[in-house]
Length: 309
Image 1 (cartoon, one colour):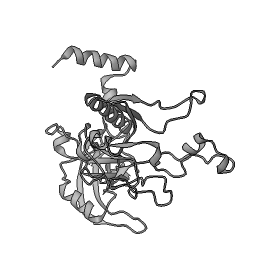
Image 2 (tube, rainbow, N blue to C red):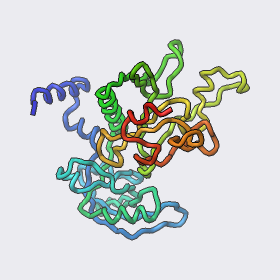
Image 3 (spheres, rainbow, N blue to C red):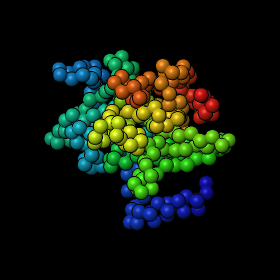
Image 4 (cartoon, one colour):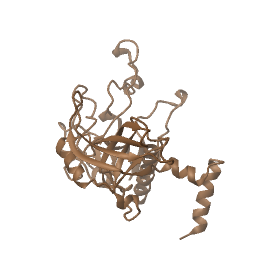
């Protein structure tokens, strides 16, 4: 172990965030792990609700008192991961707190997956009372995960011989139009636009190919500029034309930050390896397509999609 290297990295972190302790950095970057108190694996669908659920409870202690509030959500993870016996993170199911009982210092919650009854039943077979729920205390974990995924994507691409350029998060108007994609990859003189996405947290069988909706430009469409047309998103899904390749992090499924699935940004009615169109906006991709490596659309490496026409 290179202790000097780790010491310098820690100093870089605490130097950038002057006054921050190591404990505070861990609390912000890493979700808190809370042991399950009880499980009730009875599956129910309550009146006027659309999802199936089972139940769990947690004990309130000093370390989690400020976090365990009604409506708070988290992810159930294996005891082996929480206790350090296994290095791989894995989501078993999701949890949501629905009742806080201060008189007993406990909370009641629902277990769900966002999928079918059978999917919940399969998760409940795996979920044990010795497992834990992790909760993102300060709302940073998702952004950290996204940044780490992009870091490792760049590292892998550069190792494979690609030149990589990260597009700016914002663009001053006098410098040109905003790019609605994340990276340019270049190899052999050819440049392709790459958009990085994640799996759908509600159901990791699917990708989450979303984009922020934008306001409709004023005036008749025939008078819109190219920039206005390009940047108008009437629905919250990506346009096919915006990027050439999707790179979807598989972390939520595999627990490995280096795992990605790649697909060409083309409609499936134009090529056999394409993605489905959004139902009411044909120039947009379906925002939750199935994402399975080896299905003819999704591939394990960018090299496999680079030369697809």
